[in-house]
Amino acid sequence: MTDIHTPYSRATAKTFMETNYQRMLSTAGHRIDDLSALCHLANNAAGWWLDSVTREPKPRNFGELIALMHSELSEALEGDRKDLLSDKIPGFTAVEEEFADLLIRLFDTAGAKQLRLGDAFLAKMRYNQTRPDHQLENRAKPDGKKY
Image (cartoon, rainbow, N blue to C red; front, side, top):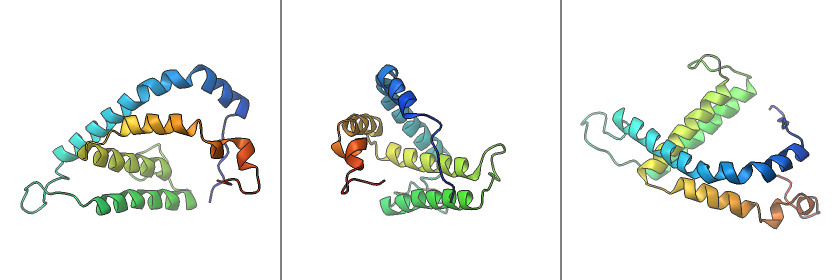
């Protein structure tokens, strides 16, 4: 598997967080909800929410939708393991393609269930900023989270 190294220093990341984080976060929720609506409408228009034989509306099984999201992650892992390029969208890696597929499946499901994914994302990002187990010094402790 590929080791991943951040392109940013901790100092650069901290400076960004102090200067840009709140501004960018304030609009992120709306963009996520827009992407959820867009993906769901596009998939609905393409017939993914219809029975392929009867063409009647078909409820989707939540477990199946989660499994399909998981399969995209497995495909991304395989793409990384074999250092593959996308065979469908030129100029991208297989990891980029499969992550995009994951987002499409995730946003489609969120749109169908009318989840407040954008608000939940913002709330979770804010919460994570206050978590003791997310602080570097606490992760360094013997019982701290390693990843």
